[in-house]
Length: 143
Image 1 (cartoon, rainbow, N blue to C red):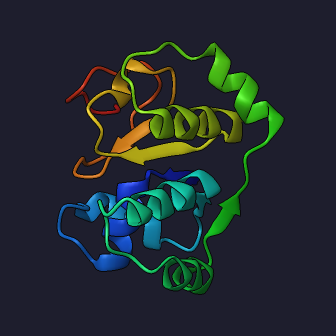
Image 2 (tube, rainbow, N blue to C red):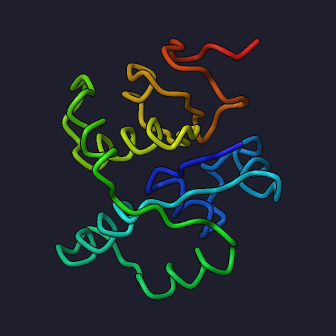
């Protein structure tokens, strides 16, 4: 299984934050799964550090991503083309790009963002119990 972590899911994992539920933790920790981290998330973190909205050390985060064996995903033309095809259910440009990447990479998007279920991608809530297929309403469980 391929998982793409939303920026907050990555930070919660690295900080062992309890907002990342047991099901998400288990999937991320499972060596059989490929965990993807987008360069867009690293960019978002650095922008938030620069404007004073977040305290983080990007170098330490990069080291942790490598140490965890996560795969870095760059921004490709396919991601940008997919971004142009997405509906605009909310205004966060970082989420839009991450959603386009998850779709293009065939990955389950791990996020706590309430807007994600409106997008045509497989996703898992950080606090949820199971991945959900594209178009699943909030609160639904995969059969």
